[in-house]
Length: 285
Ligand code: PLP
Image (tube, rainbow, N blue to C red):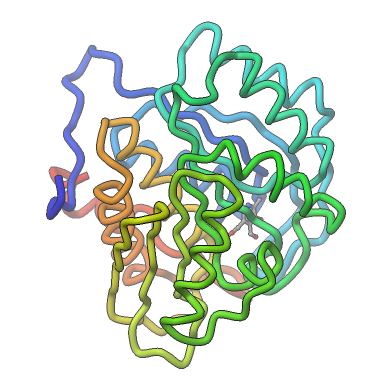
């Protein structure tokens, strides 16, 4: 699928690939598990969801969030794993250290570690900087969850929090990829989308030896809510289809670029990227 922008469609009546998002709810419908499930549906996979937190938010901001009790987080993952099965999973907003530790313990006890691809999007804050992860949870993210990841997908703010590197150019982006990979994931993707001065959006993928760069023309829009979720969700769907990590990231990049191109105004604040942008090209979803 190296150059492809589409995933195959499952014939009607057959079970599609099964994926799980472990994420927070966005009442505004732009990011979080709402964006993930929309992307999964668009990409023809069966999306399951383990809810970690409920945010009270609209396009103007996150007013508050409430964590789901840890036994309920664990129970959702176990219920899906033990019956439906999981072919790939992603994590998004995890809110607290206790929730991260619960996910790590459940992922391991369900025998998913090393067998099911796991994409960790280390969400720390909303797109306008409101915290979505307790600061005391960073160590658990860094030392316990990221080592289980097939792929970790931080933006530049998350890179700074996780490995203390300010990415300002290609060299520092590579240094950040090395530092992230040293935390233990199989692959690290350092997303360059937040380097606003650059005319391109260039992401660097690294597995300790191979380096891949994925570059798209920068699309300037204030409506970028849910971009990170859509990228990680599309990568997860492609992994469930059996694609390699570089192929899946190439696919996800082309997917999210279309979503950003189709971004729309909503409410009075930051609108979402358009997770349905490819509906007009339904045979390519
Ligand atoms: N998950 C939830 C519940 C959120 O509210 C947000 C941002 O507000 C995110 C994830 C991350 O969103 P983005 O894809 O814009 O980074």
